[in-house]
Length: 362
Ligand SMILES: Cc1ncc(COP(=O)(O)O)c(C=O)c1O
Image (cartoon, rainbow, N blue to C red):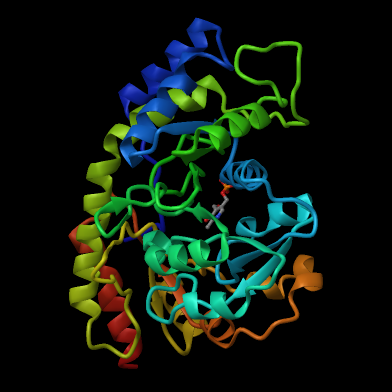
């Protein structure tokens, strides 16, 4: 038995969609990206969607679209992937790292409050592992101090906060379609969603060399080429159709894991009563994490660590990392991501849970 962390999904419809684009000979700026934008933004419940060539680009463009600039401070969690913060550095803005909540692993609103200065312009909550951040708390702070919110929803396609899909609660949101995510475009890709027309217009231009819609030779902004190719968009459209079922499969696998691992000497994931967790990752915590990881590897069970080095302790973030984040630093040593994907069978989950129990009783 060999159990992978994630598995890619390819079917005939995906293959045919790709072949159709190849045969159309239209590879960029065509109908596929437009349709994918419409379909994904409709899925989230947002008015506008702008496809990009990665989740990182989506975050970068969202940051520029809400008007972030040199010298601005932006509060972000440190327990996340570096791309939540790295585009800020390119803009000249400063990431201010905040603690996470011990249960949901998402940004701790109380710590956010403590980190606000007169330079703070935005907050970037991350719906980490597929669990939404507590958005009402974040919104209350943002309203009080006139801050903008960008949701980093790169791991949370379809997750819900109080019955609303993540992505429409803040001013803008970024999703990633990196291959291991809950849905992919079979390559790097991303999307920005928003209900704000002005931000959407700016984002659309910035992704396409600063050109406003309909303009070919005039550039109103200094932009980028962050566009998504037609081939990838066509694949994304088919993947999106499967997403609701895949989410339910992930939740079903998580439920079995929870039942089998509850009461053991490890911490299992938490789902707040206001949350719909989409389990991009099923993350447990364990004191002797590295030993358990090694034991599972011997049993042919793949695992991951998200993330072993908090962003504020990354060498690249030295200039911004002068902060003590006790929970974040402790959890980085304890988190372990177990196999999780929509094709995971009950027997696979049982095999993993049995192996963990065997190790715990050693
Ligand atoms: C939380 C988070 N933010 C940002 C990103 C960046 O997305 P991408 O890899 O598509 O650039 C990712 C995914 O890797 C992520 O998990």
